[in-house]
Amino acid sequence: EIVLTQSPGTLSLSPGERATLSCRASQSVSGDFLAWYQQKRGQAPRLLIYDASSRATGIPDRFSGSGSGTDFTLTISRLEPEDFAVYYCQQYGRSPGTFGPGTKVDIK
Amino acid sequence: QVQLVQSGAEVKKPGSSVKVSCKTSGDTFNVYAFSWVRQAPGQGLEWMGGIIPIYGTAIYAQNFQGRATITTDESTSTVYMDLSSLRSEDTAVYFCARGGGLPKFFDYWGQGTLVTVSS
Image 1 (cartoon, each protein chain N blue to C red):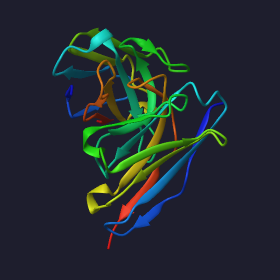
Image 2 (cartoon, rainbow over the protein chains, first blue to last red):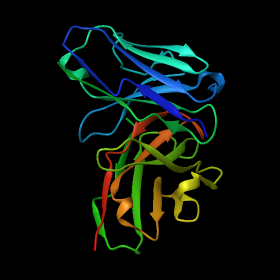
Image 3 (cartoon, each protein chain N blue to C red):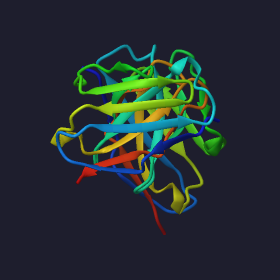
Image 4 (cartoon, rainbow over the protein chains, first blue to last red):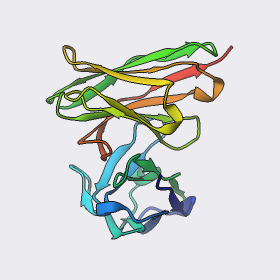
């Protein structure tokens, strides 16, 4: 199965700053079938990005995804207070679909 | 709108089984795939398995082969996940999630069901 590694483990930033989160795959992700989710404490994950760079319905344009092959990035252009959460990447190019371990974005 | 509503929290003894339900509404049930994803306390997300109701056959992650059973009831648009031979390491929040296939990204999620395994 494809193993996903996310870095950094924790990102400490202030509101208004730019966040750059990395997701690296152990093998090339077929079709660039990679998604990003946001999860807040006590809530279910929320889909942000699919197919590496397509924003899900209702997701603000400060969230953007990029990358291909084995290296993918989620960028939050300017952090809003509600963006402090844990972010997971998921590949679905090869079965079984797998998740990364997550990056926590917390307030500096 | 699309909703996935899960059954309530459970407390189980080691060695027993648990069955969690996920009632869906707001869209055509048969044509989507439904998966179960679990999250142990303070940990990440782990895909357990999934099913496409129109085909009826579930697929499972290797870690859950033989221990998890995913089924559907089309008459009530409900997905079920049965996990047997429970051990303390199965203590987790279990989510159902909808995708367009297996594997696929998940666009709608249930609220989660906490299963606690304790003697």
